[in-house]
Length: 373
Ligand code: MG
Image (cartoon, rainbow, N blue to C red; front, top):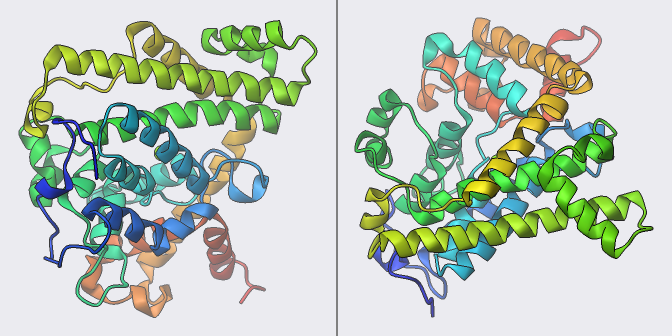
């Protein structure tokens, strides 16, 4: 039995699936969504897609898959404390990055630039496209036929012109409504997860060092706590003990502040949540410290010259693949040449967006290296 708060999304009140299906046996509608996401092809590909470091750069760095699992873990624990719908939160968290291109943001920016004359490319919208159209495994429908609430939660942001084309899931952008608390939570858990794991990956890669990070209040404070208790701790354990405390502080703050916001606005239904301001939030001081960390990572990790070299290469691979396929769609594998997924540029974008990092590099070699077949 689910013990849900009045402001949580109830599976019984779901607006349903695009293609009607019999109710699932022994699990809720949102558990079924979660299960379909885990069994999808796009989900398995996340293992070989970059978060910050390209997949082949090291075996221990986060990939989109481990990132998504960390997001789900964080979001679920907050959801349980607040009596939100854990299954829905988990489904949204696991699906939130399904539309990511190879090579992280460099890949998405490159593809977006290539697609400018044809409606652009946005990974968040692409995640919805994956679950609505691109997965082809069920007999009765294209996509995964997920519940409305899961689809709406996946669509974090959306330009008005796209919202109008999307029908029901685009409505809230036109009416300027907030998403469900479950969607708000998955969104903040995403940020919380990557800010912390990027510190870990940044240190592990040697692109960041502990001294630099000690300028950042969130890191410095928790590092001091660890060193006060364990003055002789080795660097690896120090990093982990610090990061786990940072995550814990942020999760507790997020839970408490959100509970306060809920008490203040007293939503009695999901409708009330949609009309209220964003309720899932950090407290003012923690939000500031979290932003400080985010800015630090942007300046020192994402713009590190070694990361930039890799992303420049990634951009080139995506650009060249796009140009080659668009100029000659016959180069596409036959299943991508059928015109049922959209116009030609969109077909090419779907094909490239679905690639893993190493598949994109292999495809690039196949097209451009004369001695490769
Ligand atoms: Mg993410």
